[in-house]
Image 1 (tube, rainbow, N blue to C red):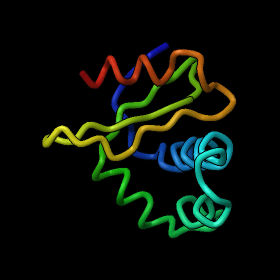
Image 2 (image 1 turned 90 degrees about the vertical axis):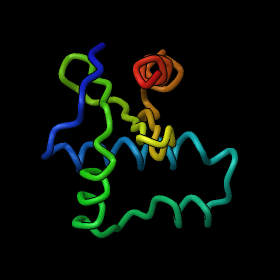
Image 3 (image 1 turned 60 degrees about the vertical axis):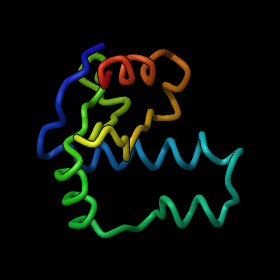
Image 4 (image 1 turned 180 degrees about the horizontal axis):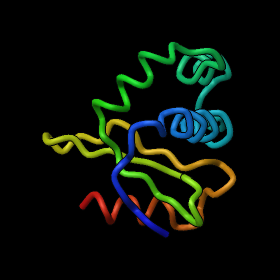
Length: 101
């Protein structure tokens, strides 16, 4: 697994990771209405891209596939921390967290 800085142009892939994590992993903790408000199927692409560029997350990649990402802001705040549902509970989140420390 490779943990590296996000590269411009990867915003759509990060959106897919985010959407997968929210819709398939968080559903046990949130109502369908909350899930759809948090990660709607349609979204403002320009706003999403802008947000990702501001966050400057680290991505977790295996065999060239981005499977998770997380950011750490200068204040110590983590805004985004997501792993695609198909690779949950396989150590990707742990590797991202260790990298952020």
